Amino acid sequence: MKKMLGEKILIPAFAIVVLIAGSSFVKSDFFEIAKQIEIFTTLFKELNMNYVDETNPAELMDTAIKNMLDDLDPYTKFLNEQDVETYRINNAGEYSGIGALVRSFKDRLLIVEPYKDYPADKAGLKAGDEIIKIGAINVSDFDNNASELLKGANNTAVEVTFKRQGETKVATITRAAVEVDAVPFYKMADDKTGYIVLSRFNAKASAQTKEALIDLKGKGAEKIILDLRDNPGGLLSEAINVTNLFVDKGELIVTTKSKVKKFNTEYKTRNKPLDMEIPLVVLVNGSSASASEIVSGGLQDLDRAVVMGARSFGKGLVQRPLKLTYGTQLKVTISRYYTPSGRCIQSLDYWNRDEDGNAVQKTAFKDFKTRNGRKVQDGGGVLPDIEVASAKANELTTALLNNNVIFDYATNYFYNHQVQDVSNFKFSDNDYKEFKTFVSKSDFSYETKTEKTLKAAMTDREEVIFNDAIENDFRTLLLDIEKSKIAALDDYQREIKSKLEDEIVKRYFYREGLYDYYLKNDDAILAATELLGNENKYWSILK
Image (cartoon, rainbow, N blue to C red; front, top):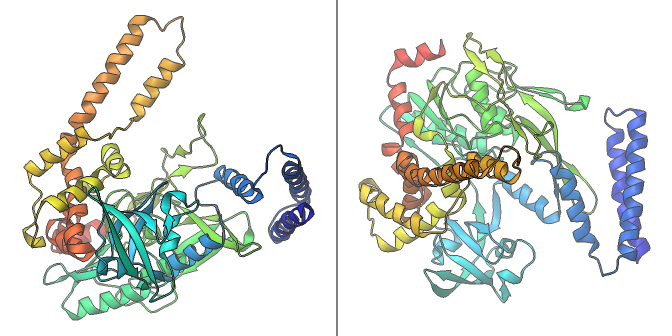
């Protein structure tokens, strides 16, 4: 049995050597890789045969692989068979399940967003419901991601036990086919301006964007707002095709550069454009990444669109899935990509880390020129031509989101307020006061960069100069910072209030209602509509 285990390890090791043989490695690299594989193989076999307690070879290997890849970048990942299927679903845009966005915790699954008219919604599940049992299986007893238990063949039923506002309830959900639209919403923002939300770059992205654009033009749209905010990216080919809707055939959109020659590629548009003249504004924010940055950066470099919002995420790296043995894959960073002007917008340097092992944020930027000679820069995401203050992220708002404080408040709000019409919804100043009280009574806390630095200084203090008086000053400063964090709830009220409204509106009117709400209340959309209404200003920015 243990001999077979050794043989199973050698097979993928050999596959790795063969894979590398097709790259640009020199002979000395082959020897070093083969040497390290042999060391690891013998170590792994001896460890499992001789360790004092029973080992789990699969878990050990999983840990070894993940720790190895963590030293590279967060996008290079090992995909087991389950991960491969999830990756396929994300790109295809369809699967069979309950039709809800679910977040996995150690002892529960949280319904984050049920999709309108899909199985979870029809069964009565709401955002904020905590699933504690699926069929006869307790979520807390399930080692892997229990959300996989919710998937299954069409028309099969699954019983879930969940908690809602302190009560335990049971629901039976009949699974069905779920389509994940790349364009979940489009509509006329006013009588001449069309608005398109492109939320992901799956296989449907360009086709659905084209369909929306044609439909809006048929309804009288003479200008377009393309919303890429919170779009994490996806397929490179779809980013090229979406850009191609607005620029001519044969335009260079992306260049990829790698140490492996076959991955050095120029990507040009291949199709006849749909409309090369229609005025276009592209909206981005700090969660617009990868393919979103290819589209926004490309259209900006070609002076085809005005980019508005906040600086994008800054992911200038390209990944490709490489097949391994037993149905697994390695999603590996193969190259950096460059926009038409020649800039790479990668923000973090994962290969030159600081003393704590963290990736270094790029702070020195190089200047590049768009086709019309406008200055743009590399290294920090796509910087909008016009920034919208409320679109910018800040440390406090991010912490409130990441710690589910805004989400939990929205859940309580939903069960304590009646809202009948999205057009009449208003999150008042009194509501915000209630939110601040909610935060003060919660266990929410976050540590600023300044606090981390001060605490590190107190821990690693130099006794010669660090006396009691200085330490007291440090502690006083930390207390002042804590007080300022509470005051920051007022300083960032506009940004936090916007996130609260997003979450609350979805509870009553689903995502479609949220986009309708945006058309009349979102600062970036209103600013984009105003700009498009001023032709002289719009063209002056591009020229």
